[in-house]
Length: 204
Image (cartoon, rainbow, N blue to C red; front, side):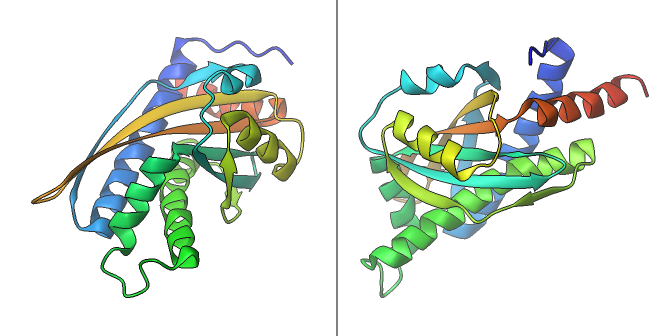
């Protein structure tokens, strides 16, 4: 299904992204007890093949399926070294810091915050009912993670939106620059629902 997005739609979706990432920054800052700033690129509409072009063998992905008014999901894809650094910030003061289960749980929590901040903003901004699943964590290339996402998410994912985000974590004696890619996958009916809600905003 060919759906045309004009500047108004992109601006509205970018505003959702700004709100969501702002909320995520606040939540992460409280979680690690450090100052976090975020910079993000504009939301872009991608071809599914574009995800295969940015190939890294050391990526960690968290896949969140969403249901309700939308059928689709979110992928958080981050370099393995950045995932490890972020996880270390969360568990380093724990007596079980080397426990692999604890470290994976910490990454799931971060994924919940990042994806949750975006779809909560989308839900409130456009008055949508969105029910998320728990994140499914996987590792591999961007292409492998995307393939697993399509298997985990029901329906035909015809539209992919991408948002590259850079988090800067600053403490008294440390600094981390952590980059990640967020993808929103939707079928045509779900994208049409979003555009109709945005159009209602335009005509108010």
